[in-house]
Image 1: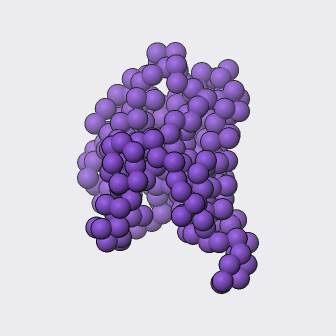
Image 2: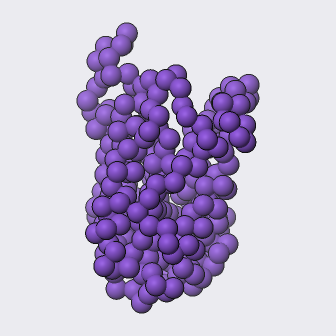
Length: 253
């Protein structure tokens, strides 16, 4: 599906995978609405894209705030693509030396990563349903899971549950929206070179990269963005989760 002169919306767009995706889709000719929590990083990301980028501060778990972001997107043209990159990953053991895991921590991770993704899917689908089809599609929704959805490590119960939920709902949401000619896909990245890893010493970063069978390095956000662009372009991709991980299978720790 061609997206030039169309609007796209990316959550978690102030950094990492979301920012790389915003850059790539803007380069492909789209007007990009960058959604993230308010702050200088969001404003700077939108400013980098110039006329192709618009910053909208919103919490992905808030229906009204995300609906306002959708309204801002359709001002720039028909909304054709929505990509859910917003996420958090605080590690907490279910039970350990520090005691039992706080339930509110588990709930917060699921709310941001899973409920926030579904909130985006449902509102974007509503905005896309009235579009004139392009190359057979009215729109494309893309979620972000993680290899932790399948190979969750120690301390990742909440994160794995949330990302597993994103992967699990991909097919039923795709089936829900097939009658509207809206495709739904999910990407499950492996160990990516994002701000989550930026604070680690270089030796630790290299060690993580060497755990990947091939290529033995950290994934690049641009590689995620390239896959997003391919999903948008390839009309047969629907209802599936694609691992983007260099064949890694995570160890328990």
